[in-house]
Length: 190
Image 1 (cartoon, helix red, strand yellow):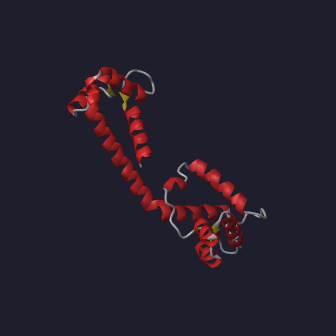
Image 2: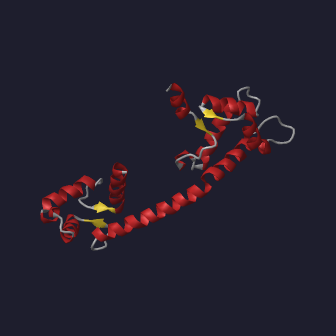
Image 3: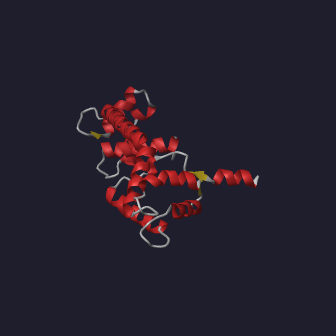
């Protein structure tokens, strides 16, 4: 029983991350974080990270690594004559792994986000009947009525719906409020 639980808890470098949320998207923040990670891995503060130092750090993080596999992955990023990665080599290794692990996945995610944004825009336009960029209580009531929903018969109920979504309290729902509402509904139901 304990062995099964132990094996479930161990993570491997060979497994693809399930989410690109691990990807550092802001280059200045990325650079700062990479420098901190480099400094953490560089235990003896000699400005180089050896394969052994990386192996020890990954092991402490619970990531199983085979030293020979790690060495073959890192070796091409170590400058000739050095025993380990310089900071620049570490950055190059990170960029290579980032592209290999997230490159295609990130492009697909961006395409999905664009498609999702387009779908939300089209849905918003259904409710924004006059095209002014806002959904009023009257517009929402008209659409609910067309859909045959009982909420569409009572303006008080429709106004309460608007108030629940109207973050800036202007009595209308703009696209960003609509988008936020739709994303929170998707998150709760998925």
